[in-house]
Image (cartoon, rainbow, N blue to C red):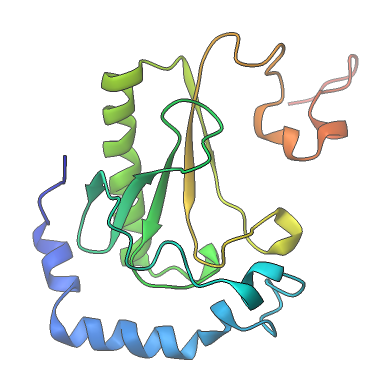
Length: 174
């Protein structure tokens, strides 16, 4: 199920923009450079080629990004949304890349709703080694959640720091 490339995506994929993307990629060569502050300490950077670049596992795609199933899924249906341009940090994304990622997130949700009928979702991005990023190519996790997949899901993504996942039992302010 690949999406048709929109007019905007075709325009962005034009030769001039591809050249600009190549120049940005070269300018952001820090994405695979161990001196990049967000990747300092990453053993992955020094020892692996990017597993996302050149991937042929896309289940959804537009001119700028693609979606594929995670090879090590947290739950059934765990998808990754990955820009085609190689760069490490989500905050280096262009407006066009953000739009393409968001477009695929919605398409991926519809796909997962049809295929797996989850009860909820977690959406997450790791930015830098301190956050747990192990692959220096930005990717967004779309993780379907199912009733009973954990004993108590309260706190959701706060669980990245287990001691902070649960809210205090009294004095909760929202």
